Image (cartoon, rainbow, N blue to C red; front, side):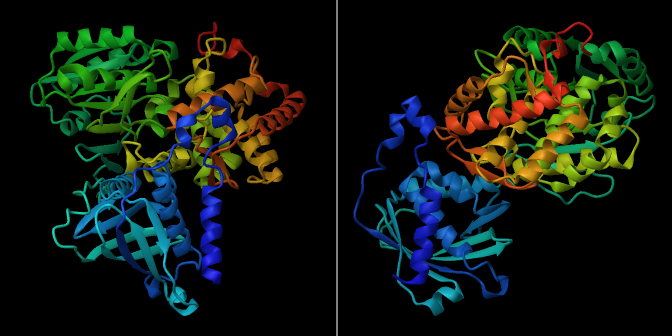
Length: 579
């Protein structure tokens, strides 16, 4: 067997190593073992040429082929194929582009399904041709023999772009590729334009960074929302209204607007069907014009999530915008388009519904209670651990001070907020509909869903994420993915930042149950993101009971020496004086 064949076999076996995890076997997920689609006998010949000028790593083309074969063998593994691409990587076919990991996944899924592709073989070639990057692939398919030319361009070992051209079309053959759907973020914004943009295929969301938007005479909101009726409809968090209601009334009068305010609850335990129905009734009352009066949601993530879902449902969708007033809402919820309420489970009923605009105004942080600030820091640390080491460095050096100052009025605070939003945009901006199921920003969300749903704990979202990040990092240490020195540094930094590492009542059995529950949400595979060294991410499909028990004992040892990181329900969002 040639050296390149051995490398390909090794790459394939590495990716295919755990198609069915121990957790899934315990859960009895027998459907994961069923075979693929019925086979038909015909072939597609594929020629892949890696441009010489890009100088990819020698293994990158073979890893791409191995991922293609794995996805053909098990279509659920298209997500692994997608991870060969950069976050904003693209596929180009006959002048049409599929931009971003979500669109790339749609493309390959359609190709494998529509053409009934059921086998893939890398054809022969000598070492010299392999060195030039010429790869010949044979696909068995129901679509008849096809010859394709593939030209991948690699950046840092990932596919930045991949062009495909069909060179031989069998007579009478059906089209091989589906029409393109582009979903690339637009970064061509000037100094007066939005700081960021996203595009979900229908709505282009503009994300603005401005300060003191409700200052008297400030017409930015009025102008940006293009209000022409003399009225602005606000759905505002009750706590925010108590603090800023008079200022908002005065602002509206100063810019010649009538303020029609809906005051709604925004606590963690009020993201409910009752709140949702209340908002529907209020939307009926204020009766916004279909396009000319976008609703502006002002509050934390609970308020903006619930308002967005109500707007998605009222009259099959009325335009909305959001202005997050919490640190968590600014650094985590300001990019995505998911809206939901809790019903039978965390975010059990919801939709994807993009706002027209998001406004990041840090002037609201000055009145935010410190527990809410720390909740936002839980999400900041998530991005630091698996995506951007700059956040880790900033929080190491300045974190305690930034928390005391509530991320106000400093260059470092501005940098942390900006880099956090950048991280979310880079990771989820190209795939707002979450079609790719391996996402680094799912770090901190493998166990936290179960923790948030447990009424004994009553954790803020960012607190649950912080606890999850710590335990997931210790699991990464157990697997040899995260060096112990970095795990020690993580625990020490959490203690310095005043973040929780656990809360009374959590046991190793809690994490085992959470592991099994998240598999359902992730389409039958664990797909757990773990830090592979601070600032990088790996995914695993198997976390054993023994690994959970060892990580839990490691955490227990740390908490015995640092009891302040073990919280109790007196710090819950509903505890007297918690805020």
